[in-house]
Image 1 (cartoon, helix red, strand yellow):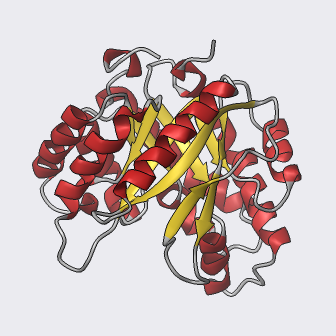
Image 2 (cartoon, helix red, strand yellow):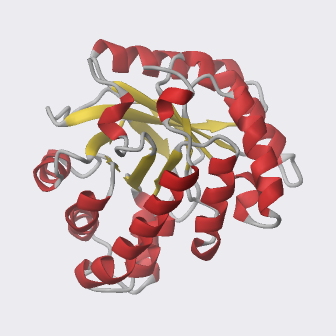
Length: 287
């Protein structure tokens, strides 16, 4: 039986890298002057797997650009880095945010995969029950394949909506659907008083039915380490983050050296933070 130890550090905390960005990655690469072909996207994903896998406890990847991406990542990762496969079909206009998602059947379920991940765009609208049912179907899909389930709700709303309260409400609504690990936005987008971030993290923690980690989207990379510490002090068990780890290497034609010089030390520093302040996952609940 697979447990969350397959994605955790020896401390029981999580230091996972997200590399499942699709058209958003194309937009970022094009913004740095690259010819953002599918081949470049695949090359970037595999470079991240190769250079960061030895320092991460998990890697999240997609199979949008063919089965060789998952197979290539599987070959590059050490046994200490669990492989997570995204099974979300994204509705995303070019250059825009993801508008909605659907659950997709895993097309390339490599034997090395230990977990599945689903992104859910949560809004306080008439589609809440549909999204909850999708989350239930996702956890059932993972159980059918005897894999872990990582659920990633991202809240959206009209201008001026109460983002922090929505994050807590989404956690209370969707974490009880049976997921093994809940992936959550950082309170206050990592800005402001760390004690206030911790207070909101405590509310998220009270609302979640399973261990949870934070993502980095929407947080300035410079703010992310302190935000992770504050969230961990409020109950988070670590991170599943992409942009805050590897955004700085996007300008390079070959990201290898910048990944080694910038992203590896950054990931190691984040590892020290989650080990010192994150809650070991078994203290939240056993899987």
